[in-house]
Length: 431
Image 1 (cartoon, rainbow, N blue to C red):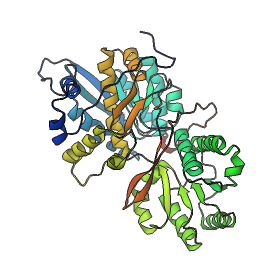
Image 2 (cartoon, rainbow, N blue to C red; image 1 turned 90 degrees about the vertical axis):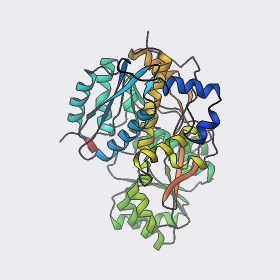
Image 3 (cartoon, rainbow, N blue to C red; image 1 turned 180 degrees about the vertical axis):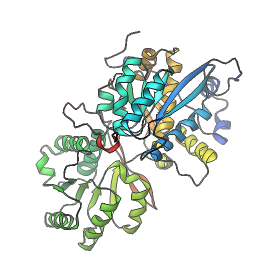
């Protein structure tokens, strides 16, 4: 079967199951639920069951081991629930990238030789970028749960992404600032010589121009700084002088602690600060305990807040994920968005295998491209021709020491193709 390069032409919806317990009882009489249960759960396993293999390529050692292990937890949870597809037992084979590009290349070579039907991974931008050419050569579809660099999927036919891209996140932040808040006094503060937010800022600028008609009208202040106290103080003085009411700033928890302390001292508590996805990390949330009067908004979709989500992206699978995660790992183990996205990555692959009725890579690839609003734990999944998810962007804030949904964009955002984006490799390149 030829691989599709055009827009998907078929509409296939496979309703995922509801949560365990009471939800199971309520739905047990429903033909849709019964059909799904027979397909993915209830088929008895035996030693003679045919086996399909899904590869898992994640950092289990090195500096990104924590993210890799989070994703593995989500994958293993999904496999424990949905471990039989159309009579095939699903086997996981895990390999370690060691958090380096060299380790990733060794791992992907070994993994493709095992001929899995599909692969999940990897955590880390550079590691994911290193995988693409091997996937295309082997014709094995793969999905990265949380790596956001647009070139990961743009440069590989067989690579998909479960999370939104940086450019989509930037568009979401711009819509929130200019439409929801109605701001026309927005500041953009970025770090000198930092390319990590290039795609996000391009998406931000594009959307601001669409909404305001002219970027300079809505963004009267753009400045690059080094994360030192003097430069932070100077930029905050400028924010106060220009009466800025929304400020995007791309720094981590330690630097933002200094930034917010100074902002509070200058009486800038009325400014809404926009940030990156990393602001949903535990270290940032813990730091914000000291700055409870500062309003922060950042791209982050937490499954834990789905109960409060009134949009159509809420699914029963989100509840199921929360319950089963707590049952497997303990109530004190809070699932990260990486874990939830990895869980969904597994669901996407087994649904694609079910729809394709084939173990061949091109067939599974086409089935992935055919998804139209497939309901998973983190939302609805439809992919563009580059393997990027097309969906509304969820922005979160922090309340009671956890990320909660603040805003869901009014329209679905499509990832932007980038020709000249600087590839982000420094953070996890081989040493």
